Amino acid sequence: MSIRSKSHDRDKALARARDLFWKQGFHATSLKDIEAALHMHPGSIYAAFGNKETLFRMALERYAEEVAESRQKILDAAPDALEGLARFVETAHPVTRDDLPQPACFLAKTGMDTGLTQPALRAAISALLDRTEAAFAQTYRQAQAEGALPANADPDNLARRLHATLTGIGVYALRPERREQARLMARDLADEIRALRHLAS
Image 1 (cartoon, rainbow, N blue to C red):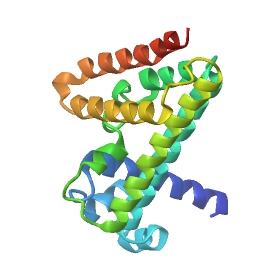
Image 2: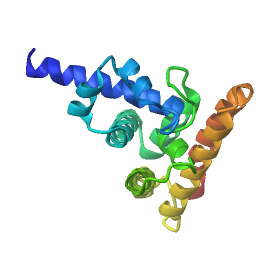
Image 3: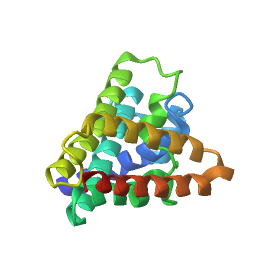
């Protein structure tokens, strides 16, 4: 098997692990679940990814990277930063999509798991959530530089509010009967982001 083929197989296995943990959480996912999802024997899983905690952390990191790449593509295609952020909220966030394991952000959902006591995982989740919030703040700063936000706007505070609101909408969307309302809230949030432009007028 070529190096490229091995890399592709490893990438697919990690994607399956991400989806499994996203659906079931860390503690509810057994080694048997992982074996079945990854189509791998225990020895192969250990050789490729280490233990369950390491695999979970790698799945979280993969998720964060994918979200960041998706967000950047949307920002690059948008006419300006503020519009790009609004488009991300209304089209790419898990609550607006049907092709993802859960409507809530994997990082935020994991961060709320009070049963997750492993210090290394807690630290990794916190760092990844901080990275997301920092990316939002940077986008608001870009919007400020473009003149879409007034000079006295606080990008860090706007980012905190956006992050908290998206997390809340995702939690709300975990109730199947509230999924459509959650989508509408995400679209309303996108419109609120666009409305910030008027503050600079």
